[in-house]
Image (cartoon, rainbow, N blue to C red):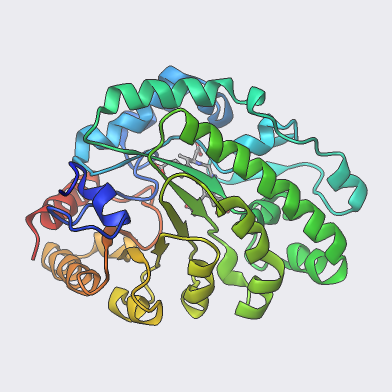
Amino acid sequence: MAGMSAFLNAVRREPASHTPVWFMRQAGRSLPEYKKIRSGNRMLDACRDPALVTEITLQPVRRYGVDAAIFFSDIVVPVAAAGVPIDIKAGVGPVLDSPVRTMADVEAIRELSPEDLPYITEAVRLLVRELGEDTPLIGFAGAPFTLASYLVEGGPSRTYVNTKTLMYGAPDVWHALCAKLARMARVFLETQIAAGARTIQLFDSWAGALSEADYRQFAMPHSAAVLDGLRVPRIHFGVGTGHMLEAIGEAGADVVGVDWRTPLDVASARLGGRYAVQGNLDPTVLFAPADVVEREVRRVLAEGAKAPGHVFNLGHGVMPDNDPDVLKRVVDLVHAGL
Ligand code: 1CP
C-alpha cells in the first residue's frame, strides 16, 4: 500500500496520491515573517539556534502547504563548525578572509566530529516532532565541489578561476581538500538523518561550471563518497548540469534535480527512467502574468509525469523578490493536478 506522504512515495518511485511540491530556498528572504524574525541576528548565529531554526523551517510549510520541509541551515555551517573562519555576509553569501590554496591550508582544517553539531541534532529533533508524520524533513549538505569553490575563491564567484587553477595545477591539494569536505558533508548529513531527516539533498549548485570529463575526474568521486550507503533517499542537484545528468545520477542519486534548461521528459529519457526527477519551473517565470505561470506549471507537470517519479520544484532557489502569493498559487495548481 502507498504510504501517507506523496513526497516520500515520489522519491521512492512509488505511486503518489498527487505530485508533491516544495521549493529550494522556500524559507528565507522572500517571506516577510522570515525578514522579521531574522532582523538583528547573523545568519550563522541563527543556524545555531534550534528554536529559531525550527520556526524558520516551519514558516513556508504553514504558508504554502508544501509536501516537505527543508532544514533551515546553510552549506557552510559544517565548515564553520570545524573551525574554519568563514562568515555569511548578508546579501553576498559565504566569505573567507584567507582562502584555501595550499596543502598546508588544507591540513590546517580539522576534521568535523558529530560532537561539533549538538544544535543540529536538537533542531532536527524539534522539527520532526513539530512536523509530525505527514510532512517529511529534507536534510541537506553542500557537495565538495561547491563547498571547495567558496573556500578557494574566498566568496561567491562567476568564473571559478581560482578553483579551477587549483584543480588543474595542484590536483593533490584539490583532492585532499575535496576528500576532507566530503567527510564533513557526510557527518553533517548523518547527524540530520540520525535525528529524523527522512530524505537528503546534496546541493552541487556550481558543478555546472565543469565539463562532464572534469566533473567525473575532479568532483564526482567526492560526491559519490558523500552519497554512498546513506540510509535515506538521496536527491542530487546542480544548476546548469544538463550536459551531464547521467553523471549526476551515477554519483549516487535516487532523484536527479534538473534546472529549467532541460525539460523533465527529456531528462528522464536520458537517465533511462532509472531515477525520479525533481524540478524544474524557471524561478523567473514567477514574475510573469498569471496565465503564463499556470501554463508553465502545467507544462512541467506534464513533462514530469513521464518520469518514474516527479517532485515538483523550481529549477533553482526562490529569489528574494519572488511574491509569496504566486508561490502559494503554484502549490495549489500542482496539488490540483493536470
Ligand atoms: O529554505 C531553504 O532552502 C533555506 C535553507 C538554505 C539552503 C538549503 C539556505 C539558507 N542556504 C541553503 C543552501 C545553500 N547555500 C546553497 C545551495 C542552494 C542554492 O544553490 O541555492 C548555496 C550555494 C549556499 C551558499 C549561500 N549561502 C549563498 C549563495 C551565494 C552565491 O554564491 O551566490 C547565500 C546568499 C547564502 C546565505 C544564505 N543561506 C540561506 C539563506 C536564507 C541565506 C541568506 C542569509 C542572509 O543574507 O541573511
